[in-house]
Image (cartoon, rainbow, N blue to C red; front, top):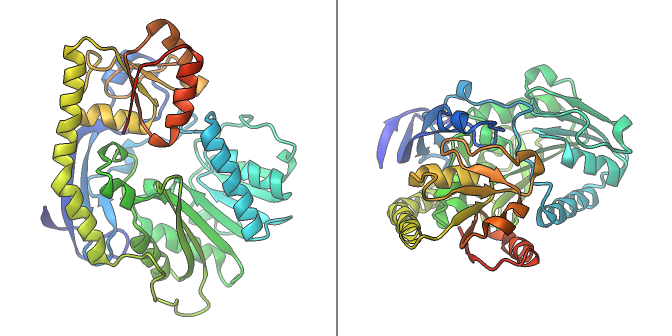
Length: 396
């Protein structure tokens, strides 16, 4: 670890502590890559994670947003998984019940293909506006279509005239480098409407650091938050933080905030760690990540030496990061499986594995299936059993 002269994008503090580096990683990990040649020659960038000792925020300080691409080729939906859909619908219902979202105006920043805001409109009879350059018209035909507007663009100051009773932003803030300015923009757009509810969901950095989940570190994720660093960002931006909680086996971090009428209450909520506490998590990660990577390299080398056929289940960001961080090739892992039919026949950025549908495994008959997210173990195991397969199952 080393202290570097780099301003914190969250609090503006002058110095950060660099603690983790990975070089030459794909700059996008969920774009639809149509040929193996394109995948093997995919543009790369560097990751240098640094923590702010003043607020606990973690940033990839070598991130260059000009290298990333968000368009119709960006395919990150998890909506083909029954496990995820159950969670997603339950979250929508919880938010509708919690904030009485019935006949209300809703904004979703970073709506992707429109799954979630469509649920909020249908389940609560709400009106919605979704912002995302990756939006694809017609992906989700809905009886609420006349109450939904989609703007295929990044949310910014130019959309500050769009107002809502409820503003949500799911799995987007981690893609934004200038988080301080972004949350300040959201606050300015609300103005003096104190009843506006703001809800954000992001990856939980405590989960990444404590589980030594190096596969959850990839180029598009340039910003990482724990409870404390997220709450401190919102308070600095003029919000009262009402609640912080986690979901999806602690992988997701949620925040409820409302605009403060004056100076926000700076008292931490239960579970918020201090900046010192965040640095302790960083220290733990630094002490263990090399051993964790070597453990997986040894395991995969053993499988290869024994002639075992290994596939990854999950053709998204975790899979790309797992393969590229470990330096794996097609000789180590031949295929990646994904239940999203739009990904079938595309390729993993950086390493070139073809992404196949689950039915492909009935003929291929793998010896080992490595599941990229343990949340899906029961679902994947059931799918394999239904196909008459009983490979060794490993999870990250």
